[in-house]
Image 1 (cartoon, rainbow over the protein chains, first blue to last red):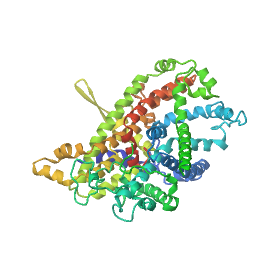
Image 2 (image 1 turned 180 degrees about the horizontal axis):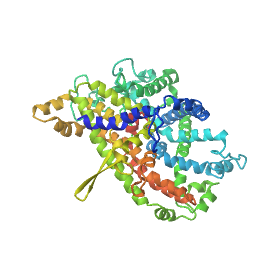
Image 3 (image 1 turned 180 degrees about the vertical axis):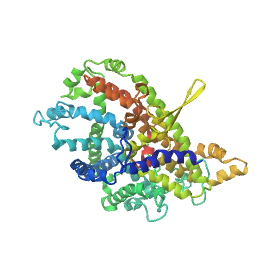
Image 4 (image 1 turned 135 degrees about the vertical axis):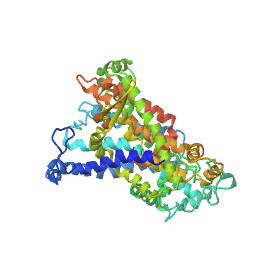
Length: 281
Length: 292
């Protein structure tokens, strides 16, 4: 039963990866009548002496160093803005998430158009500043090209990261109600102490709350959120699992989140708390 | 205190609206511009009229799009390729996850770790060797009653589908979900004489609805949005997916109204799907934690 997936992964992931590594030491071309020859480290020597490569490395570092904190920060702000329930919360969630479901092809094209010298961005800047700001030729000026691309990238991806923050925020509140750390190891995040001191904000689960979502009976000791791993509790499963590399980013984010949500700074979240039994809608 | 709270919530709402405006304005601009003639698009840009469907509104750009590119064909191709990838992906990946979760397989941990290790390899690094490799694969074609075998998968539908069926993340999601379904259930089924496949089909899969929804969405989005891969491996016009169609609009004279109409045409189906299945969408992203 593993076979179909295993064969496909071997054929279309492992094999090309090995092939790519092997081809790096040859003079292979995609379409060429010349026989493939082993050329040792020649390709690498050429790469490391190519100034374009070093420039590209610098550019991508610049991109990453700016995008990671700014995007995560904005995404957290967005998550906090729509974390609690209010009228129209679904509208805002939908709108914040729209750029994520838009294809990168469409996004690039759209921003390419808006970034033109006579494009929407410059026209709006000029209108709202009453002609004071003369916009740049964003993508053709080396000074503004990278910031412009960074803005585009953040615009597209912030909604995605917002959802991850939101999942983290809401699982902390859920934990605050159910009490106690789940899973192995240290607690995922400290429970906001201030909230525990206000039981009326978080009704303890009583006998009536024992409706669990799955169609199967609860085993002794099983928590009633145990049947919903594909929902918002995935990080419980990630802990100690083999997915360390991938989970590392998430855990870092959650650690960071935990720091922000310590009692002293908990006011970030605003006064009211969401009903913790509600999932994301 | 009450006043402070009220002021707070008004402030929060203002910030929410500001963020929403920033998130939505390019998309609104795209949809609105798709209804306007080129000259008006540029004329309206310096005011809020850029975001309002006013003035000379028509569907002319859309009819022009269908004249300029075989848009209907592209849409059918993309729907077909995405649908087949999703359906086969659900089957193959859940089957693999089921075996890893339920059956005694030797070296199970190693297999699972190897599968997850593929998550760290970005597709772009695999793309070039993959092109070379799929071009070596045999291609079977039924021509009348004779089976013809030729070499190379380039320029076919299957080259757009088969490499993307097996997916480590889908296997992982299914595996974690299956682990949470009590094993007593399939033990009971086994006592009743059910085989592994029957347990998979009639016990485990019917309970795995949320995981299936997540996998479906996370397979559909990249399939629909794929651009780099079809650009590399598909030459025939009648096999191209929607994203490649964009290129047609930058040959010869560019009409931005038509570009916007085509961009809307290929974005709106996904947006409609998103609004219809919003809960599943958001839950899948939340459980993914990786950029799709």
